[in-house]
Image (cartoon, rainbow, N blue to C red; front, side, top):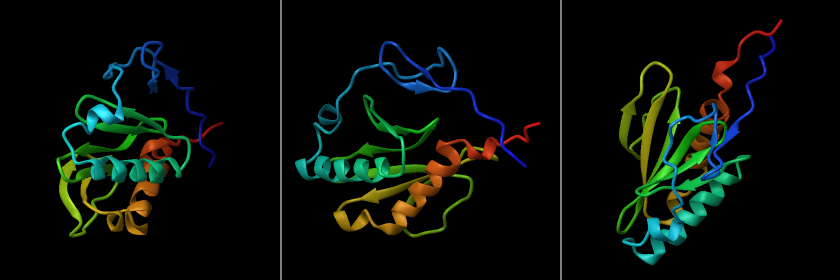
Amino acid sequence: MRRAKLKPLWKCPKCGARLVSKNLWHSCGQFTLEALFAASEPSVLALAKRYIAMVQSLGDVQVIPQKTRLVCVARVRFAGLTPRRNHFLAAFALQRKVKSMRVVRHVDYGPRWQGHHVRIETTADLDEELRAWLKESYDVVGMQSDLGVPSE
């Protein structure tokens, strides 16, 4: 069974966000990573930059700082983070629920997606286990591989 080709992404002319359909609602603003982490300790911004590099190593990922969070987009949003004063919460979506003591928050988004939040305080938290979860999130959710439809 072959997958049907997904439609090309549309790029917002105002902010550059990649979206799966034209004029899809989104946070259309110009924010910086530095502004997002203005209330955080400087070490948290440095740690966030390492997390972003990890996410971008997975493939073609657009990183979009917003007013209160950062989102990571392949075809669709699949991961991100929310800054705190002395750490940040890494977020990612999977089709399954991860059962790990590292997951500090879980959100059920219905039958297709399960949201997960992991507290990141040190570089040791940016390990292979987290990278594997992010890779799965990128491959399945971000690239919409779960939407494969038999082509004729």
